Amino acid sequence: MPQLHVDIVSAEGHIHSGAAEMVFAPAEMGEVGIAPRHAPLLTRLKPGTLRVKTPDGQELPFFVSGGILEVQPYLVTVLADAALHGKDADEAAALKAKQEAEEKLAGAKTQVDIAKAQAALVEAAARLEFVRKLNAPSHH
Image 1 (cartoon, rainbow, N blue to C red):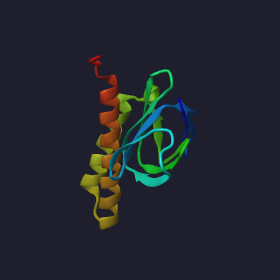
Image 2 (cartoon, one colour; image 1 turned 135 degrees about the horizontal axis):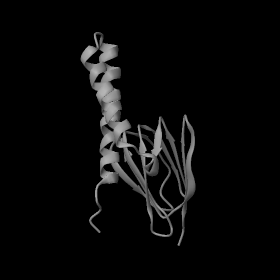
Image 3 (cartoon, rainbow, N blue to C red; image 1 turned 90 degrees about the horizontal axis):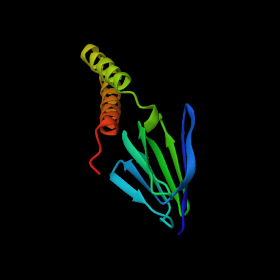
Image 4 (cartoon, rainbow, N blue to C red; image 1 turned 120 degrees about the horizontal axis):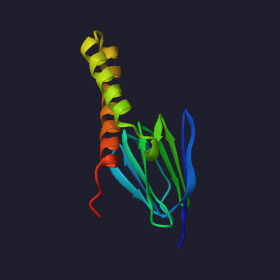
């Protein structure tokens, strides 16, 4: 069975590197599923959950705050603005980030500040949703 190699990198450093059967990513045009031999693709990511299905059948969740997804036939590279491995997800921290973003938005005066605060809020809300889904009891 052909495999993909996945590299997830952010400003904080290398988040993940390994083999995958499939990668699901929150592209700007909606969620994309990438299998081996996918046509080359370069697209922006929006904040959300990126899932890596490993050859042993596990699904590894990552939160990405946006960035670039580059697809080659056997290589997927995620250049994330910020990324978080599912095992490092913390609901309290995510909730705090969302509250801080909401306060910043409430206090924003200029269009630039408002736009920045809205972007931070979108990212924080997506991160909180990621953490909550991760911690929800699974229905398998």
